Image (spheres, rainbow, N blue to C red):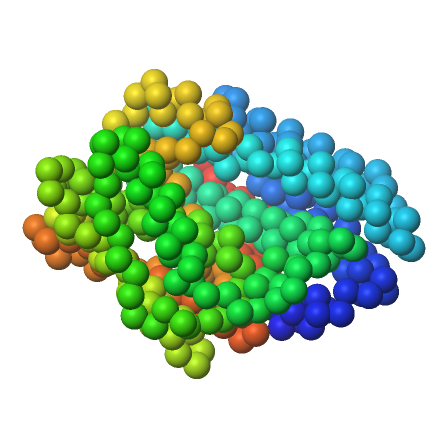
Length: 351
């Protein structure tokens, strides 16, 4: 991450060319690995159309990347940039297509066994972690191009990112969805070290805080529909990290569900026709139901050296702790699978 910051502070033509060569090579490798994993899905996943759609998206991106040569000059950088803009747009549906695949597996009763559930969680963890990496590389390359520079930013990294500001924006978003669902929403109070700053990706903080606050306001409304108490957001800043705590009064998470909330295949929302429609509409927001919010948020946090933890008090509420390390002190969290270069579930046998 420190190297990314240093390169981005001086986006000269030679730096852009160096980054473009790396991105051209690295994205092709990462897409190939993801395609390989999708091709090796076991039989009980093989007839799920959404998995095939995602595989075809990555296949097309891989072929287009391999079709153009590695950039050797500014024209090559422009050609790669145009391609990555197209790839970025087409990949916008991947997350919901994977959620649709899990939804279909759940409807067909394919993940009722512990073995199938563990396999799916392991596969999605790797796939989602790899997706974060390719998305970060793509967006960082695009943001370093001429005309995209913003003062105080290095690509998509804001040098003096203030989580408190993002918390206010995410709270507005969560309350807006809550009001559409319930007609009312609890107040969200942000306090603590609101001046805390760090070099970070604001978009990722917004996603994580959006998910944590959506869960908090929904739980609060379901337990206190007439007079909901406020959701509290407290911020603390230190030399090596910045932390955010989201506290609600939604009654807490039952003990038997506290591990399940981290599973992609788990959701406490009834799976109705409305959810199925949302899975096929890329830009339509939903307060809850996809099941990807918490596990994906934790992956975002861990990818950059942080974490998310939940503490629940029965009949009271839940506190979610989001820890962010300062970017210069962490390296990219590459899944162990890629480091070991071994096949995915090479000894898997269909049950």
